[in-house]
Length: 119
Ligand SMILES: [Zn+2]
Image (cartoon, rainbow, N blue to C red; front, side, top):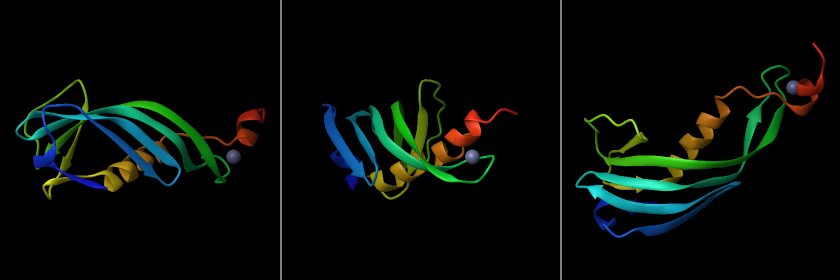
């Protein structure tokens, strides 16, 4: 799903993204001419790999998400939230979900078997 930046207003708009096993539910609201605020909850599961044995397993996810979505390159600096830049004038939620998934994958995960194994 894509939403054009120019269609995001100053009134909060509810969004629901259902992307395979991952759901994003939240609100977007315009913050200034180039920036949109997204607050929501990410819920579902992500396929990750065990760092020890390499087995793929499904990791349950439930986390709060706070992002600033930038229409083009963002030149400021923000500490309150991560900034995600989009370059085609619209917010690409498929891309956003994929990058959230990717960042979960990059964390350190162990499957139940390896977790329970004594060193
Ligand atoms: Zn394992």
